[in-house]
Length: 604
Image (cartoon, rainbow, N blue to C red; front, side, top):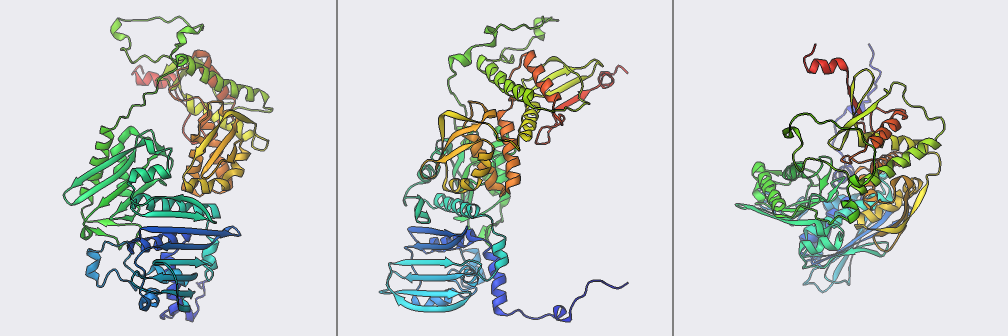
């Protein structure tokens, strides 16, 4: 049998690659997108003992065209500037043994060589004890200028035409807003981890944020995230020569992604699934499993017990005493949560305190059997409030009205004809049919399916928008604010009216009519969080918006229903094309036939 794949003899031969190809391959390991360049150069500035670091981005034609990072650090002596751009040239270690005691962020000497291999780089640097500065230009690894000039103490590096000689790498970059958002998020993390350094960040000449060196972590966090700062609590813990400090959020502040989960080991920003898992273990059931708390955690560990040389970009580390470190994190975070006030003691309004007992409703007579011992204990009785009743009625009325206006709506003929029996736990509708079968219906999942199907049917139509009497102002982080313009068209299509309202601030003037008048900023925040974590394409983003709108506008779990409201949900669910699951794939209804019930009670 002849092999259909032909391999040329030239490909089969083993040969040493030329220097330019080797440099391009090495650059691909270190520099995979613009945020990698910013990270490497900011780390170099920190290692140079800078007290001020400025990052400037310039964009044009839908891409980042220029990156400039300047600092007031130690600078590079004139006779060492060209050496700094050679592969594996560094001042931070001398031998392999130094890796076990290295406290700097960089140590491989790959960053400048890798960046220069795929871009145009201009460096101006002046040591503090030097009278003149050096201007050094290198393009694609080739030196084009090395002259003296005047400049302040420190180093300024300008990077242009990134990936000019690797067009395939350019092709795989995300949208401009996404790339800028990644840089913004990374700089926010550096500002939190190094509060003693003044950071200034500009995009196209406009300042996105600035911090004041010498501040403490809570002050920096408050400057970057003013809305969330009040819900953060300090973390401190020590086990021998290992120390953890930082901030974590109260359980009521969670995100849909890990974008605001910063971990530093000896000042190095890292990604560590093990540490993230330890933090979530400390929270236990205080936060939903699919969400993440906000955290800024700084670990100080003896360098000999940390291996930072296991990843090309040093994003991952390995610990020699991992179990001890993780246990310390769990104890420290749990202690912080135990010491915090986790109660949300907001006073209820008079309307919310009004019981449904004040509403004249016709309820079927209830027969009570047995002694008082069979009655629920005090505190276990769930009683609906007037506010809750009105909210549920409004939500059901909205879908009922939309259902009546839809033409050609055809439900699944297999859906049984059910009648109301009761409700369990304020979450599950108990229903039955003529055959004696028992049905449990998740009221939120069921109504979410109704909402979703109605939104999908209106997808090709102009979705109705309701303007808010009091617009909602969203105070965002620079990374969130930078990403929002790219998703505005999809949000507008779905019924949101969102307008700029100052730096890093947007104003929500309208929301989809299905959300009702009680909508808060969290829907938009969730969407932005989802987009940041997933880099969604427009089609998938539209689906995310539909699901989120359906979820946030549906009857909630825990809402006590009247029999009429329960039957309303059942009837509306029966008219959907796919009544068996919610948009996320969870079941809406489960059943027990009379035979299964008899078998459970051993009657057969």
